[in-house]
Length: 242
Image (tube, rainbow, N blue to C red):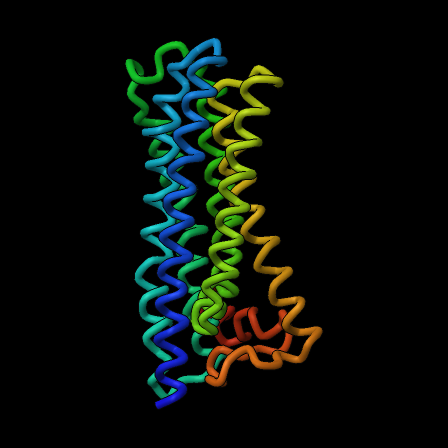
């Protein structure tokens, strides 16, 4: 009973953390748009970034990870092992690596010329591919994200996402205002966000490994001892390559 109350308490605290991050990210995004509308030479890039780049980013990530995230987090009550969960997560990563280039090619091939008006095709193409690379980078943090969620480390997730949003805004503004980039500046922001998440979760688990996973999780399903445990098993690799 005490353990259940502790879990419920952590979940409620986690909800409040995540809600605050969502609110703060909206504020930063709003301020970002105001700054870019004022200082960018061609505000049309803001519209393309808000629709095309954002749609590519959300579509690829939702198709490759959302369902697997829910399945993995429901496995805590099942008789499964950690490497089985990790293997399932890597199936989603491989799926994302496959569909992301396909979506990038689709967005490049079937671009609305009227919507892209004023933006050179080479700049639009490079921005699409940078966002595609950002998606794959973010997917690499997925095993660590799912295990951190299973460990109820909501405060860490909130902190990492808040830092990532701030870096995304700063890099976008710097690239647009000081480097005079247009659409590419928004793609650089996505790359900064994804890289920040990957490095943050890597730091979190590196610290866990150095401390021997003390007081991290009572459920052995969410306990790992090294980064090797976060990699797919040989059988899964052969299956994915077959």
